[in-house]
Length: 497
Image 1 (cartoon, rainbow, N blue to C red):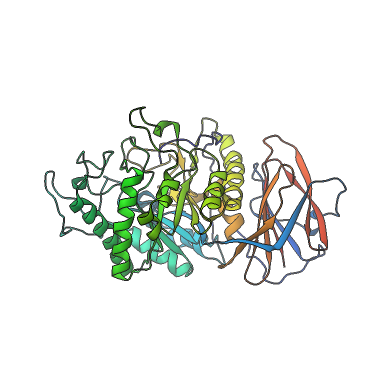
Image 2 (spheres, rainbow, N blue to C red):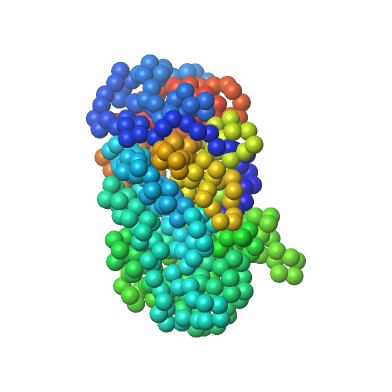
């Protein structure tokens, strides 16, 4: 990722309260209240409320004429797979070297005392977020090749990345991990570089790259980190990444690669899913290409129209940096049996730090935890789990990105960013096996509803007003109706036990 979200407001880094193990209260399993068993948690852009449980009197009687969210648990949609971010090389270095490592990890992954993050998307090799040089798992001297992968090794990840992944899985046994390459080894590419270029059009290279990805799955599994899903190329239509690993992979080329990798995974008896595309909702203006060699704006659909790719693909993955999440529903309508995953969106800094927290809280809830999920996404994954106050370390690429937490390299202390609360409004309340259920939009109040396996209902809502007012709305579930007032840009989670 290296470019700002086309429709996202400019946001910036705000240093908030110190992350601590007891930052968030545990969700009561069977509590009751004067408000008929309804519990409400609130986060506001001014940070006066940060996933704060509201008093029972915050819930009011129904208000005549107010817009109403109708929750219908009988209308079932997709089963959720998880919410999370990425332990990039940069993230791993910051957390692994922090004297608060264990507290940070508990706060992020423990479902009882922290967020309970449940899905991670891991770069296969380097992205722009590395604490040192770019790398892959099979780097050889310039001019050499290694078709048999004799030099393949994940040793780079054994020092910091894999130990954190194992710790995260120990804290949350339901955690799933996805793998995504930013670039194949340079010797497989037309420009002999990790930055840019294309995959060499040679069957030996395609087979070698397929073996490389399957080898990654095997080696990570041996290291204690099973891989739930793979994508074939991060942002395959980004033809000119700005100084960081990337590759121009056309849709017919990806379809060919899907067939090769799918066959190899099947032959190896590995249950890892394959996801296609892994790029923006719509073609980014920077990726359009020249008239004589245009990019395909229907890349994802073209993969599913290819018989070989469709045979092996388990779904399509999307990013947020251009377009609208309704594109996911358009694809779902055409291919209703294909799963949809949302796999990347980074908060960004701005020139006005005061706008970072409220804008990211508002936009990411509206378009990710609400928008992407209402449009069939099984996952919501942001980007870096942790970055330093300067948005690094990184090598090329994004210099305005913000992590889920900000780790001070000097003190090792972690500070939650807006995405910590964006994700927390879902992960603190949803349980493994949660299913999205029916809910209507009420004016400027955009929402999404879920049913947990225990029958409890979870409603996440955001006031999609960029002003300073407060909106009153009703919620109706069966014979129960009540009202609530939500400040502009604020986020609430409601549970019905």
